Amino acid sequence: MKLNYRVVLLILATVFGLMFSLPTFNQNIEGKKITLGLDLQGGLHMLLGVKTDEAVNSQLKSIASSIKHFAEHNDILVEGISVADDKVVFELLDSDDATTMDEQLKTIEGTVVNAANGKYTVSITPVEVEKLKVQAVDQAIETIRNRLDQFGLSEPTVAKQGVDKILVELPGIKTPQEEQRARELISRAAKLELMAVDEERSMRVNDLSEMEAASYGDKILEDALQPQLKHLVSEIPILDGTMLTDAHVGYDQNNHPVINFTLNAQGAQIFGDFTGKSVGKRLAIVLDGKVYSAPVINERIGGGSGQISGNYTVAEANDLAIALRSGALLAPIYMMEKRSVGPSLGADSIKASMIALISGFVLVVLFMMVYYGVAGVIANVALVVNILLIIGVMALFGATLTLPGMAGIVLTVGMAVDANVIINERIREILAEGSSVKRAIEVGYENAMRAITDSNITTLIAAVALYMYGTGPIKGFAITISIGILASMLTAILGTHGIYIMLQERISKANNNALWFGMKRRS
Image (cartoon, rainbow, N blue to C red):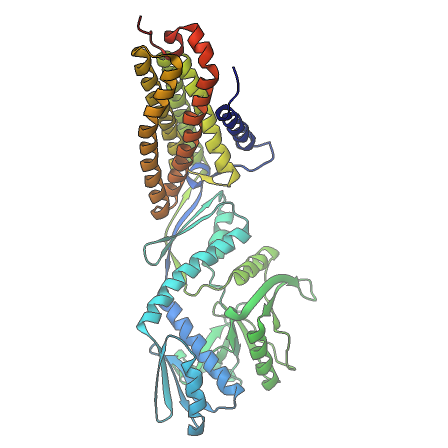
């Protein structure tokens, strides 16, 4: 009885499976473990909608802001720059500057510019509008995922649903406080804007209507700390959060949490130029449409850094810093559907799945031993290694196990044994013809290989398609099936073949096919 490379590979696979699956089976052991999905450990399920039209409006405001900065930087006189009816409108006061302004507007991609008698309108092309809407959803998915990763949640699911919807699943959310904090972090727009206060009309802010303020190119915003206090600011921001590079929690002189932010080179230049020209005036720091502070500018502020102060707790300041770092949402999101999965329901799902897995495994093992004798025991060894490999590989890559994934493992048990059933039947057919054990094993594997390979490849293709086009639980099912198929090719085919080769002399000498293969050899 000599070892061969097939048996060596089976032994290595067994060691690998044990090494990486043990931490999952025994949570006290350190190492990579499989994460349980929402349906197994409980958590929060949300379906979010994205207001994609707002992304277009935000882009128009950004265009207006860049035009305003360009005009101020180049001493070009413009008047009435604002966003109205899905267009940026402004008037050029000096026709001599038309050539310079036209050249600048040509650099703004995806826009259509109309100019007549010094009056300009800049609109976004229909193609660019659709592109912005798609980008808003994709950016929201990436932003939400980044926020949740920094929040510390394990294996959150954030996936696109349809055209403008996002599926979010947060396993492990168990308390109302955790749920509320996660919801606020996800839905927060985190849109930072630095806006000039209209000093000329600010004293009349309580007497102005929204329409009157708009006629002056202004908007009325409430104070974040004192909602009854109103601020009159220029509608077009000096700069926005797209130029922000970092945000972190700090403390002011009273040891209260604040958020310190840093701007990129372009933002720092715009910030420096504006503060240099606006000494003695106020600059409003606006977050999600509310004014958090409006300090007086005492001197030019270089370096591109600022501070947001408010009545925060440390946790709130940390969450806000996370939201700012991960980027503002291009478009607001809203809740379409929400449901909580309790941990007790998850425990019931695990219990039911484990009963199904264990009972299915035990029945298959007993059937193989009774019907195929020692050959059935060999198939069962391969089956155990197969399950260890599935658990080990999923743990190694930090995969999430869902209820459909458990179903995939149960299904894999049957599929893994199916290969050995085909092989054993082919061996029994050859033995029944009077061939030697050695020939029966070689021909049996050779004949069975084509059918097994074809069926496994077609199943693997289907599993890959499910993973590519499915979402959430469907992907979990596809992953377990795919790993199971690849593992069975190693254990149920290569591994068992090596065991038969290693034992074929003993099988021949025993001359007891009923014991070894569950049948009697013809006399």
